[in-house]
Length: 88
Figure (cartoon, rainbow, N blue to C red):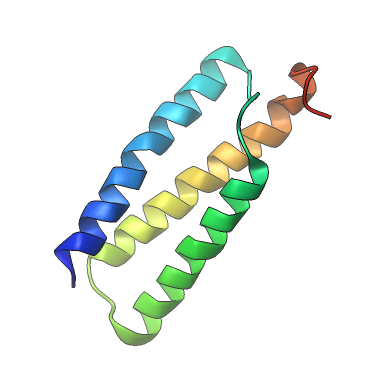
């Protein structure tokens, strides 16, 4: 277990509920990047695979939590992008 890995995941994790809440409240997703979120999903999935194969510990929960939140935000992007005239 690395305290720095935990801090990184916590810092990233703090931003996702804020982004999700803003999308739900305003239904505006202009400025969000689905490609960026997909890259993050791949990264969190890779981190989870590593945790399950080599170093399972409590930080695995943080990877799962972040993966779920990014997936929710990406889903909201595709649900609400029709409400945003700039996004095609």
